[in-house]
Image (cartoon, rainbow, N blue to C red; front, side):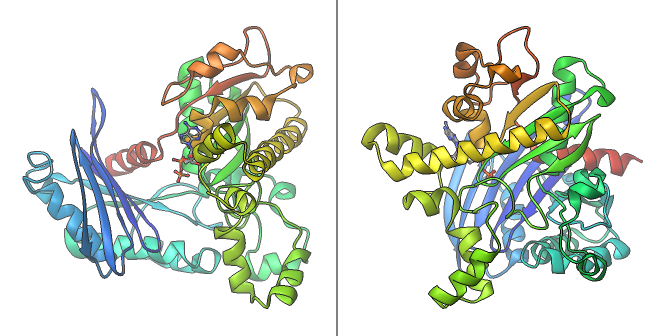
Length: 404
Ligand code: ADP
């Protein structure tokens, strides 16, 4: 079964075509169309072939049409698939499922209405996802099974004290303003892989899981389910991220509005796109570049950005260690979590009295898509690095839902 996994953003479309067979799972092609709405940039990869080109792309439907055209053209890899009929199902990463969607679902008219109902909670992302679903219907026909996989579903197991905001209860009742959490698909993939690697059962899965990429979150998992997570109603809450502030005193917003003459919408943009590592360093949102900057030039603000990033992660670790009454492992994933032994070391430095102690050799060696335990033997909690694969998790959900 070939499954097309699609992730539609406000001006981008990411995709992966995954072959799911009994013998194994394989990514046949992947890519991204960026800057939809103008002169778009296409990056497409299949086997050893890689293409980068630009083309005018007006809307999501045109972006998808270009990708599909490429998949069946000799320009791809021979072509990747002979005809579009070789795509058997489509999986969509949907950002916000609100309280409605507790697990992945096959898309039908009722589900589409449910997705529209969640637009208030994710006004930029959910419309893009809906556009993507409609584009597939238009091009591949309404018969092809389409599955929605939500970033939020995994966290709907959180207990009420963890997901309520301490604001008037009526606001929750009227508008469903509450904490939802994101990165749920990544959490599911990584905890499944942790079970495969350790032989533990779902009931015996007790983790604190750091997903540190451009977006960053940490999730406490007890008996296999999410009991708390750092992102909130939107992905802005919690840890410091590439361009997002993470936690900030809400009273700061009024002061910024007064002093800088900005409206709420502009301030939200500032907190989402100009803050975090970028805002502090004034240089870049990219952790690898910041680490290099510190090493080569000793840049003070780059160092401060890294120090803040690690300190805030430590604080959440402390909160969740106590909140859960202890876990069996701390797990790192995402671009930074998987690749930066330096950041992992700084987050966990000096925690031996809490049972956490890294093995420096294992930590240094477990980078670049490697997985494994990086703490010293005989300690608890253990520390692991497990690379995530959200696309594969989506494809697995699609396969399961299409079969049943
Ligand atoms: P996204 O959240 O967009 O999927 P990724 O999970 O790919 O992003 O993470 C991107 C982040 O990972 C960037 O900050 C990048 O600098 C960082 N990263 C990737 N490789 C390394 C590395 N070797 N050392 C430090 N940071 C890295």
